[in-house]
Image (tube, rainbow, N blue to C red; front, side, top):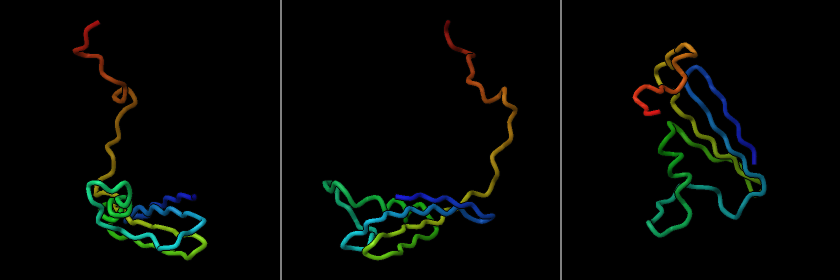
Length: 90
């Protein structure tokens, strides 16, 4: 298995390649409550703007393009990253 993550100015792309293939091309399905599998690609496709599956019997790659968000994380001084001890009993 190979996992790749790329970031561009407008998106984040996650690609997972599974060498070995299978009889069927990976696809999203509507899993029922009792199913023990079948939810992964449905979850991935709901999180991304676009999802593609490519490959053949030798292996498949599932690629999802995610929205990186509209704001950059707020820069904070290192001291503000420490856990607060205020209000805790000693």
